[in-house]
Length: 129
Ligand code: FES
Image 1 (cartoon, rainbow, N blue to C red):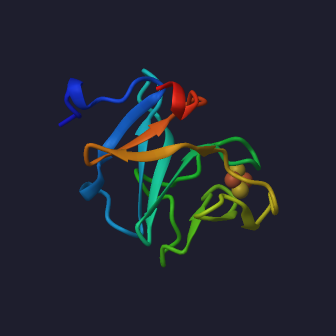
Image 2 (cartoon, protein in one colour):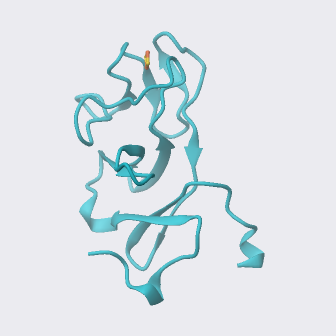
């Protein structure tokens, strides 16, 4: 169920899922265009939320190997399954693999009305909202 109209944040914020529907140590992809491909994903870890474009800096392709499978088996890293790059969950920097030192594209993420919201483009200054 989507957030109600009165609870909705203005663009560019997009609802992803209810906060309680994403377990700690898990990731969830979500559609960013009308084709429905998961163009971005959010990770919950130790209570923090981190959102990234689903685009590996190595070959500019999606990272996951199956729906919502963005993390290593132990949940410690984001993985690109094309060539095995590892990325830090907190800052998106590649710590192992062919794009060492490069980073995933970070997206603003927040919680509003018990939902996770991600901004797909720059967010206007908070003071002007
Ligand atoms: S495309 Fe991601 S590691 Fe090569």
